[in-house]
Image 1 (cartoon, one colour):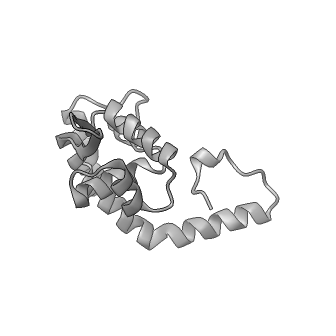
Image 2: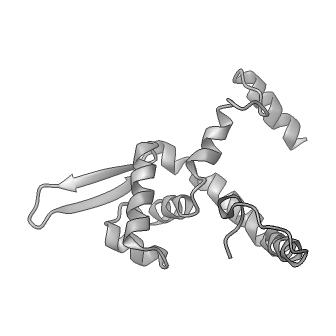
Length: 143
């Protein structure tokens, strides 16, 4: 039933959910990097943050990887960078309207992961036990 509602909505928007150029694919492309959804989520929960504070809240992310994620998110119109004319210079990041609109889908993906991540990781273990070459790490969960 939900699948039919999604397909109907896609048709109403003039798109085919299975077409290579479907606009819905933009959402997956925008968040295809493993850190981007984490950055969006933390900014959504915390409000505007300076890079160091954002990095501290996230944990386990290098300054370079965070900077790359922020640039990607800014490029995609999901975050806004605000620089203040102060000494020393100060910069913070916050979500745009489009970025904030991703919070609910990100929460839903988190709920899905809570229910199914174990099964995905078990499948990966079984796959590896067969001696089969692992697919490109960018296309699977990183262990």
